[in-house]
Length: 381
Image (cartoon, rainbow, N blue to C red; front, side, top):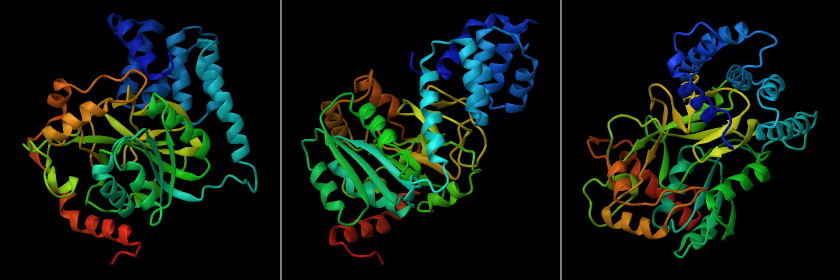
């Protein structure tokens, strides 16, 4: 099971649910996992201090490993994990990261990033709004794009090639599956030293600063140097009642969404602290995972445990768009190791229209100007 440690911690919590009030190490580990869910690291630290030095209690040792990973102490994390499960796949991954980190920290290292903030995406048949997506993210501070085009049958590849004349784009075209997993693994291994921070998102997701086009880099620059990942909650936008594709940009055509932010997140990761991806929504990292305000959060299966936050930064997720566009999405299919098919249930689950949100729609003219500038290869303004 390649999802250490969060899913297993979730299994431990379910297994010991009946022992919440137990006075032994089982009960203590259950309560410690509850503290993890709330990102109450002080309470978790108290639990770590209470573990007997010679303990062989696997749940306790896994929690200890996760705690040290959050603290950025990978050596202690490896020690605890090795005692809990000496054959765990993560131990090899951690050792690889430690060797890489030793190289990256050498004096006069050749691996200093040439960009501060970049955006990664795996793309298939995304020509419809790709120019808009590039323009928007350039306006909010993306300095570079890493684009992995997978077997597109529309103009996606052509748009990428034309956009290279205006944006800093590193691109690949490939036909393998599962496309997103392959692309993400290649990106992390091949380009991890080229950029300080990277947002790993999809083409139907727009990073959304609280005021529309604020610079994402300002938030990232304010993060503690030990922060490894910034989790951004989804804001789920629905069809807005559109049956056919509406005119205009995506951000101005779809302005109805779910009122509350979803617990599901996408991440901006500090590339030097990524061990590997666990899914498109979560990464195994060395150091704290926080929200955009810098508050620690705990992720389980790519979701924030506790209250979701959409202040400072969030992700506008246009998962369905109009009914006609969603039908095209069904034909295109999904990527991933175990993808669930697009169907009526997916549409119903993501088609939220209760709340009007014009934050990015108000920026449509600026985005359109950037699109024109990219086409004409001229500076905006």
